[in-house]
Image (cartoon, rainbow, N blue to C red; front, top):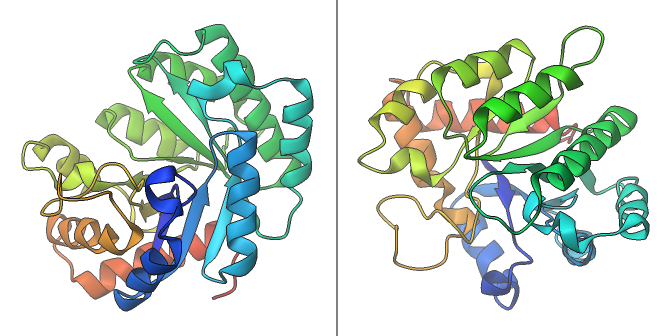
Length: 259
């Protein structure tokens, strides 16, 4: 089986075809999908979907590029939604230094709120990191628990080897999306080869980042996670089935889902 640990099924590119998308996923042995929220409205859409689709689970949170659109009441609602039995993660949260939609100070504030919510609920938090690796590592370091640990996922990882090793030292998981399949990303594949078996996850980040050989052909969907699994299996000198088994078991354990 395959577990897509990061998709945006409520995105307008996918929302009108969800039934077909999930049927296609099942045809390709994708048995679990985590749909990840970006705004309060996205949280509600994600929960509505996972309440009717048994293979779908939800993460609730406010994306760093959407923090400026949120307010105190909306954040209170996110915290309440985190108690829903189909919610298994917090996020997507983090920092984005590429776009200038939201001031960095506000991104930092909301990132800390998500980490605190993760601590309070025991649910892992999902980290978005773009063009901000030093700032991200500084904030994560300050947020570790008394044992120096973090219950988090570095989503669609494309950072440095040092960042990967530091996050692993904190107990975090590293998740790879379609970018690891791109021909130019030899360095990223080399990093992927060093991630311990028990910390490795796979995702699509659909509808974005379609993997090779589907890149540019259509919106990304959970069924295409198989290409990322195949690439990682080749990179790590193992079989597709073994890599699928490893990453799926990791996700089930991390999200505390009984298969």
